[in-house]
Length: 440
View 1: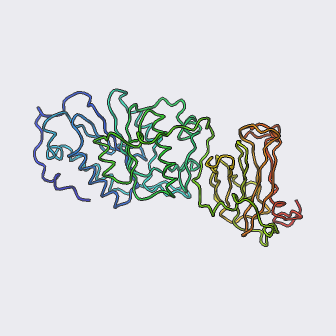
View 2: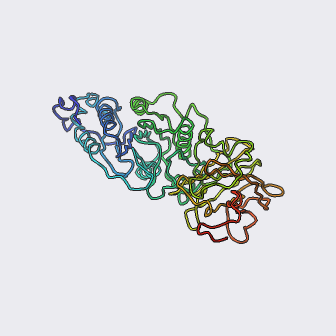
View 3: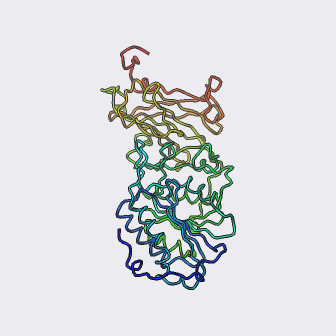
């Protein structure tokens, strides 16, 4: 990585009379960088930030650059309101140490956390980084601009269930939860940066599809909005992000999109963007063929199990590949065997959700339940369970006797809010045998 010619040409230093004066700069510029950028991206970032420092940042400001994953300072500089600092050569000379710090940070190989199914490519830990900045804030009164350089898909090594991977994104309920219950939680959190403007630059194409991009950008816009800030730029173009960062435009992402929290949403779930029609056709199609209702010829393989219903209520599916294994449901959407998917209220009156065991499971060992989570329904909720296995689709109705949801509470006194799905009977395995061949 080479230092630009401008830095090498800089000569001389400021006299004592021209040193930065005491006082609080009128604007703070903050940059949070992922330590896990690709090498080609690092070169582009380095050149862009050096140009920003020696040419573009306004006088009477500060610039702080941080590792936004490990929450460490990379470098900090102050640009005093002095005529000498209008000179790029002067800045290059005075800030050569800061440039060197940035170069060393980008050139270093930073060790990534190790967690199955997470890659931490260009990863940032935004919720933690925001708290880190808020604790350092001098308080209201000075403008603060934040430039984020890294992936908008949050990954969490300690609590992987909160990670935005494979099309998952947080429901709005996370934004009204406490920090103790969700890494995205804001309730009761007094840390804030009033008036913060955010410019987010990501690299490459991290999106499963356009809908996924919209869901993630909406979530982060609401996240900053709830904390008194504003997401102005959300782009894969570094020049666009840098331009908005040091010279804010009249309009940005927040001013052109009227996003607001979904009223009444309190559920801490990770949703998944809608998949291709053919992938969910087994669950959404109107009727099933008679030939698909024969017992399967094999007992082990990948499997999907889903529920669908008509009423304006919230039902939840729980399933595990065998007794004692990890149970997939809305608060635990991924496991070694598969994932949980919910149709995030994009089809009113035709709700559905399903669990896909991508790794082979023994269908005689699968356990599944449905809970009446929220709403009211005279006579109890009715719905249909469908199972896709070995090219065949099985279906059966189910009924829950409770007339009001119980928000997922368990226990003997809550039995009427739950129903166990008879997987083996639905798949025509009669008599029902365990994997060992003994009758259940």
